Length: 551
Image 1 (spheres, rainbow, N blue to C red):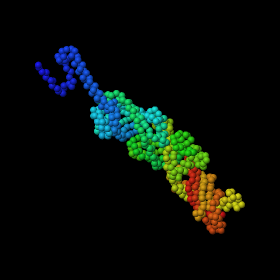
Image 2 (tube, rainbow, N blue to C red):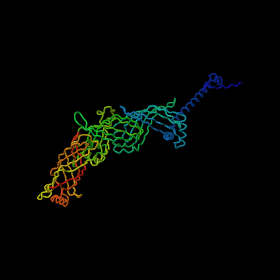
Image 3 (cartoon, rainbow, N blue to C red):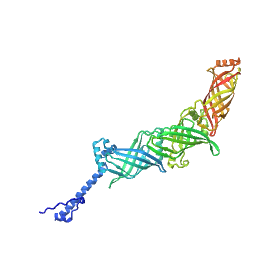
Image 4 (cartoon, rainbow, N blue to C red):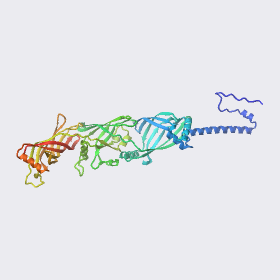
């Protein structure tokens, strides 16, 4: 029997040879046997193809349908994602974001040996995985079912093999969806009551590797944020108040410079923003966003413009704010019920005495914010931010203080005790040299003064002077920029607190033992007329000397 030589294989030899039908006929003369042979061959190749396809699909998907726990463990522990160079730019729909994303696969990070081996095998077969463009829907279940943002991402390809690294330049867009939900979250964050917050991301995308397509995949992942970054503190580095022209009349221009640090790897250029500046009204200072939502808790003072800000990773951020105060509202100038002070008095007193005060800012809204995307302006108009405003202790703002042309009037011996005539009276001209803060570069005209003072003789207190009503005053600017103030005191009663000391004073004056010097320690209120209206600065410390020649 002649032997049949095996065909010689070469690079051109097909991997799957299709034998001629006549060869089958020669080997299987019977037609039934020939048909059975063809079926066996078709079944064999079908089984091989199906097994190969299923195996490949399983490895690509990390055998997720067979061993989901192992595949999930490998994916979460082996993959390290580092994000850097984040740049954001506001747009009409949201915020355009670009970032450099580095994806590393390190199987040694996986605790389970089974999961580690499975992952290595699967990723070695797959090599690369491509994800189609997708939109991730972000929800905060604690605040309802509404989607708070849509994150639009482009397609990308990742090398999933162990020990390999992929660098991606991702350009996407974050589009806010439910502003009401975002507003509720931000309010709780600003109030300090947010606590932990869970965010859930839902997405659908196509997965493929090379020519293999694996259809539409659905993913839902959650992340629990336990420590949210705090709002960076502001450092006010410059404050200048000057007179400006506004539509034919005078007003006060305010220029503020503040700095803070950006500790995050984010770059951002913000557009100029317009917002309102508010001061606390009467009553307790608002502490929550709910309090601030009541219009009577704060009073609008001015409209301000925040210039464009360049935010760079790890760098100082400089902010420049310009505002114009035209006329102070009556609500700020009216004395609060049950007190002797107006809201403006309280604010100025805290500032002048070095105490930290608080002002509030709120977005002006779309109509008053040209050039600002409408969604940003609308959102900012619903948020009120408390801004700590550091006080500035001006030390002895009254450089010199004293009384001239002093005239003491002895009490009437026959007057009823406690009546005005039962007290000695003081007539004099009060003189004060006020060193104005360098920040105040606008005209000031002092119109009135009043004081509460203690009077001493040789360090012993013997009387009190209470001038509760405003007395007329006048002021002029000196060459050095100080303010020279004069006020007339006319027959103001002195309350005697130590009769023995006062008797010694009277005795010396009656027997002509020469002039005597009395010390006065006072807290002075000054009423001033400015370009933004009339303001009162209270409780200015003043120390001086009174020289008395006689009665």
